[in-house]
Image (tube, rainbow, N blue to C red; front, side):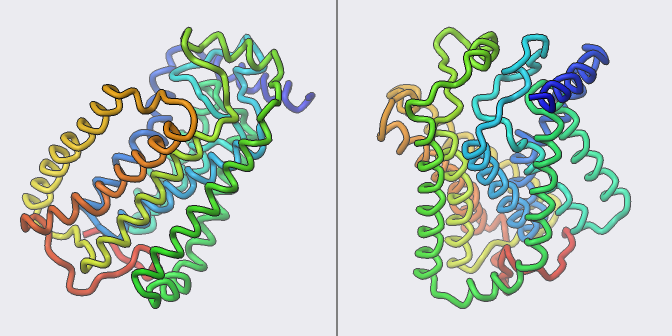
Length: 346
C-alpha cells in the first residue's frame, strides 16, 4: 500500500508539470496504439514483408500476453485509486499490470535492427521511452507497471533473437496441415488460460474505491468490469488471425513487398480502399445487428471471430489480391517470418 501511495505521487508529479503536455503525451501514447498497428500493415504491404511479419507477430503476441497477464494479476490503474489523478485521453477497461503499451513498445526496435543506422536506433529508442512516460503522465499506469512491461518485452525480444531460427526451421519442416494444427492447439491453450483467469473474478467484488474513481470517467451505459473475458478474445483473435494469415499466404508461395516506388504506392492506395470496404461492411453488420453488444457466448464468439477474420484479411486476402492484380511480385524464395537471418528494408 505504501509503495502504491508513493507511485501515486510520481503520477501527480508528472501531471503537475502542466496541461501543455497533454497533446504531446497523447501523441507519444499513440505510437503504442494505433500508430504501431498502422505501421505494421504498411511495412508488411509496401516496405519489407519479412520485417512486416516479424513486427506484426511480435506486436500482436506481446499485446495478447499483456492482456492475459493483466487479467491474471489484477492490479489497479492509478486513476482508480486516487481521485486527484486525471485520466487524460480515453478510458481503460482492463487492469494495469503490466502496461500493455510498454510491453509492446520494444517492437519498434525491430525496425532499428533492420535498418542498422544509429539515428534509427536513436529515434526508435526515443519512441519506446516516450510511450512509457506518456502512460504514467496520462494516469493509466504506475511507473512500476511501465517498467515491468519494458522488462517483459526485453525478455521476449531476447527470446525472439535466440530461438527464432531453430523454431522457424522446425515449424517449416511440418506440413501445412500440421502447422495449422499446432497453431490451433496454441490458440486453444491461450483461450483456456484467459478463461480460467477471468473465472477468478466471478462473484468477486472489486474495491469500492476502484469502482467509484473509475466510474467518474465512464459513460452512463458503461459498466466497470476489468475482469471480463472479452479483452482476451480481442487480442487473441488479432494475433492468431495474423498468424493464420501468414501461414495461408506462405502456402500460396509467400508475399514479397518489393517493387518500384509507384508499385508500392499503388499497393497502399488499393489496400486502403479494399480494407475500408471490408471493414465498413463488418462494422455495418455489427451495428445493424448489435453483435458486439450481445451478452453471452454468441457475443464473445463474434468478438473473437471478427478480429480473427479482419487480421486474416490484412495478412492473407489483401496481399493475395495484390499478387492477383500484379501489384506485388510472387517471391521466388519465400523466407518465413521467424527466420532470424538479417534483412534490411528494401
